[in-house]
Length: 168
Image 1 (cartoon, helix red, strand yellow):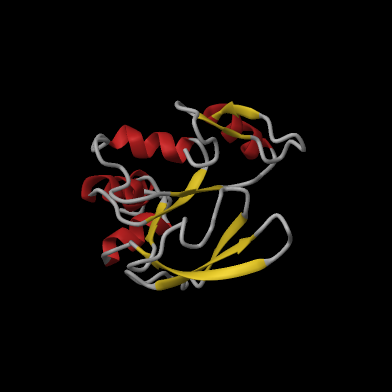
Image 2 (cartoon, one colour):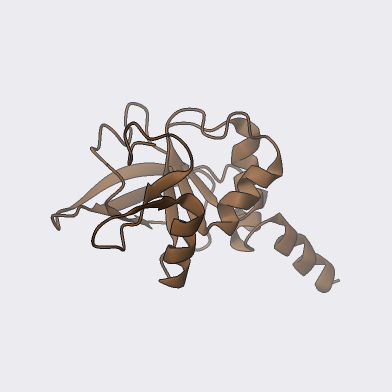
């Protein structure tokens, strides 16, 4: 956890608190949910390794995470994120959160998602730093196939299947 150097476990900073207090990731997620702030995860290589069970992606979605931007994904976990309606994206080769000097205090947004999205389209990560400076970086949507686009548009595979059944 690069936001809390030297601290292990499921902790983060509450950036909505002027004192930036250290709290559990769950509590932070609930604070952000109550404030109407969707969440995005910035990650390193092979994000999701060891979490091939779909509960890892379910937990991510239930915490309010809407997108994960990583250097790379473990294959099954990427697919599970899509199945839960979470947008997986990768940085281009050689670009990392560290190379962009992102420390987790930025306000992030994604631009350029077509309507409807296209598989593996280029997007723009917009980040506003605490000092007010706004910068941009390219990222790549990892909705890899047309059916994954459909799952994502419906909020995940379960809502997609339920809508298919309801229209028959």
